[in-house]
Image 1 (cartoon, rainbow, N blue to C red):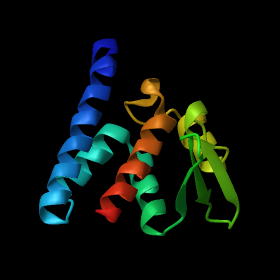
Image 2: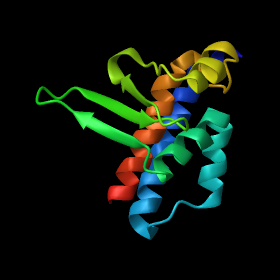
Image 3: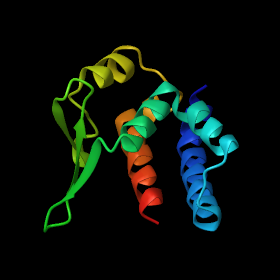
Image 4: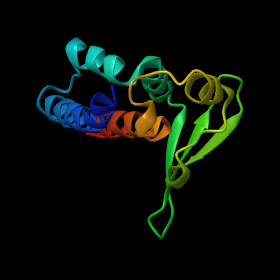
Length: 127
């Protein structure tokens, strides 16, 4: 299982490239790629994509180039997620990622992977 975990981040990066290329060519993300996202990232993939679809995520960029994401939670509370620490203070993150450790990429910094999902979805929507 250890070898598989070290291989999965490369799979995720290739998946992101495939999604971006397909979206640029067709303006759609086919079901097979969405299913692949769920397989690689687990249930947090759907939750992250859902947040973006609901326009609940804002990417903030400082003049120095640092990024942070502000996420409006279902309760209306605003959460700030700093890219540098790969952590979200929301209860869903604490339960899904920290407590339950869901998804095969959790050892590869799951919050970073979730952040990448959100970022890619935002980038694809802006193309």
